[in-house]
Length: 213
Image (spheres, rainbow, N blue to C red):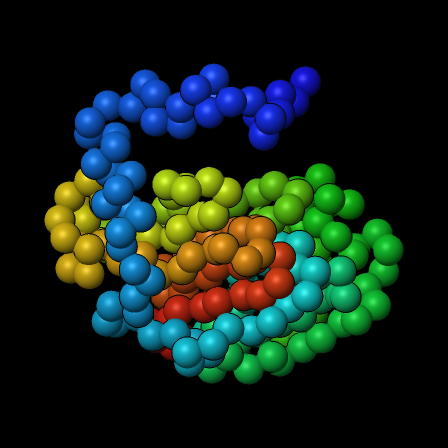
């Protein structure tokens, strides 16, 4: 049962800070104070200073281009399937009317959808609204995590080595690279190669790359 507090006198409302230690309060304040910044080198924003709008986005998955070796990002939305080159940002394939049994990943036991364009004939695991997940780290020490110091808004933090928010200054060891304050976060993570970082919300996808194939 939902318990509404709007009409409860302030002295009777639950204190959101009750039970938090001084360390937890300091950590929350540290996260709240960190502005969104550009990802550090060698990362670069694939779509420049903007993002790729995808209305009704449900989830994303990674594949590899059989020719160039570039990471590919498959996007599943209410309007069909799309495929982006994660190095150039080019949309290289589109299917606006997939078969009903392949339209969304929940139709498959392994949360996958059929590939399209250069990866036709394969299946791609999709992470997002229906579950699944992406890599949270790379083999050479990069990590990504999602925090909620001011629920329900979510912040995406990129870090390297021991630079999680518990250690080191913001902008040197860890970076607040995305703030989901306008849409619902769907999936966050790296490609299996570790060369691409993706953040998908219900309305768009943002990509960072650190090299080609």
